[in-house]
Amino acid sequence: MRENSRIKWPFYLFAAALLLAVSGCMSVNADGIKTLAALGKDQKWQEEQIKLETKRFEKAKKSLIREEIEPGWTSEQVGDHLGPPVIILPEDYGVKWIYKRGNESWFDGEKIYFLFDEDGKLYEWKCVITECPPYPRQKETT
Image (cartoon, rainbow, N blue to C red; front, side, top):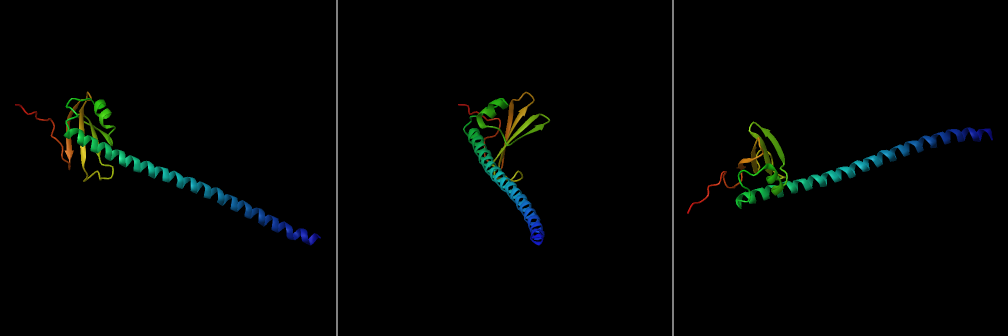
């Protein structure tokens, strides 16, 4: 009987070590699944942001063509009309708001710049690689 107990101890020790190893792998695997789920959500969020950026760019372009945005508007008025820009850059004269298509490059894609002075008033816009009316608009006189 004593020999049986000698065989059982190593077996139980091995079984306990195996159980700990497997449970550790399970927790690592669960963490991996959580990470993959989070990445999937991040990718969905990024896709939504790309669509939003493109939608806002299109709205900016159409708004300029339809003359819906006026010189002298505040940055708040432009933001309310178009939604937030992709990026706001500080400049010597104030700030530059940039709208672009979400899936286009910063270097060679279409962009629209809205330039605001220190008081937050729109004093110019520029369209890069896209067509839109020049600033300031020339009103026709009849």
